[in-house]
Amino acid sequence: MTDFEQQLRIATFDWLRRVVERDGDVISRDVLAKGFEFRGEHIPLVAPVGIFKPRQCDLPLSITTSPNSPYDDGRDQNGLISYMYRGTDPDHRDNVGLRHAMLDGVPLVYFFGIVPGKYLAVWPVFIVGDDRKRLTFSVAADEYAAVDAPTSQTAEYLMPRREYITRTVRQRLHQRGFQERVMQAYREHCTICRLKHRELLDAAHIIPDSVLGGDPIVTNGLALCKIHHAAYDRGVLGISPDYTVTIREDVLVEIDGPMLKHGLVEMHGVRLLLPKSKSEWPDQERLERRFVDFRG
Image (cartoon, rainbow, N blue to C red; front, top):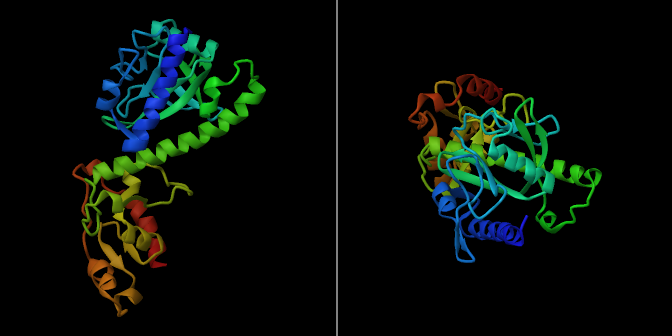
């Protein structure tokens, strides 16, 4: 890898850090496609293909998973990110490029698609495995200091750290993706009170993610404002499988200020604001399971 390419990668990581600090960790595809200027050269970060190499580079700079990708990217047997080859030819030039990046220990950026046109960026990541039978690469995330770390570090030293960091990254990607998909489905409104201030909304799980059935999917999610999220989690309100809100009986008869009256008591019997697509409506079996706990 040339000095120009090494410095370009460092500049890419620094640019991404500034973008995230300024705009948050969800980055639009337009921003990534526009990219930035480096030494008088325009550097985009994504392209229509998932494995992207700018013309100024000899090796890929980024890999991308689209939310509508035909490739089944996921977790490999070691808990690392499994990234599918481009196509089925192991010797396609893009796959060869990633293979060279693996052999040279070259850092890349991983763009994880959460909803169409929006991505979470993870950097640096390294290609650490190549499975020609399954047509997949294994991808590990690492700390930023690894960009300048000696390449002589042994796998026994590197892999435990990378496996731990990658597990943490995977959890963040899927939970953040869950949040964005739920907010999009509910058009950034609380499903109970219709509040539409994004900064006051949460993506709540129907079945908690710590138990069986608590998958980070839209049908296990509800867009709730902070007060209704807390009330749902603490059993102050329940939601029946027919999408109706029930307030706990002792709260209904309680006398308190306007927040209790308007924020909770008046929500008794309210029907949920549902996503436009029926395929994204809350799963009724999960609602039933949660509602039984509420009644109990």
